[in-house]
Image (cartoon, rainbow, N blue to C red; front, side):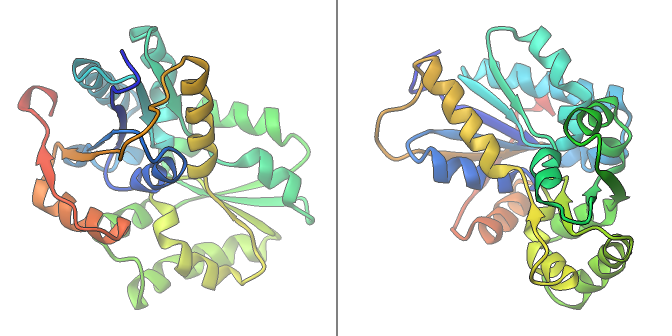
Length: 267
């Protein structure tokens, strides 16, 4: 692999575009290949074996495209598959995401932190270990919100439907004492305005895009794989409907984008 090689990024759908956005801000010269595994969305309600199988297939695809790094821009997939992926491709830089528990533990004044995530993330041993390691003295409240993933996949980010979907889960954790809220799924930052309005203006909402981008930059720099200059290209591919991904990604990222269909072997 070379500094000119692309960085592969994937998620079950469009949620990982929140991480891609942070990576583009931090690494504007890099070429990015984003795969939305939309034919298999949502991961949060699939078995661990299913999610791991899709992770392996997409890692193999990125390797076939000579990617220099792979970002698993999905909390559920990171929890289920990051260790097997690193065993499968030991020479590939693989970076996952995890809920921002450590900074939340430092920010809370009430000693109570609320975490919104998918069922798969919240039920994973990796997440339990993260809580024990980073916030043993903090009370963590969990709220699975799979319907939020479906909202984002439909492009419903604002308005009465989005507001109604976030109101009760946010109120539940706030009333239980949470003064910091963690967006533990990469889809959820696209609902940030609705969540913030429901939580109140002074409540911190923590996401993972920027820390992942910083870690990726550091790891590439250590390996001498940072691209020195030139505009970074962006290619979008999906195991689902390419037109739907292109249209929604254009809205989420604020620029006109087209998408292609993932080659059949990898779908």
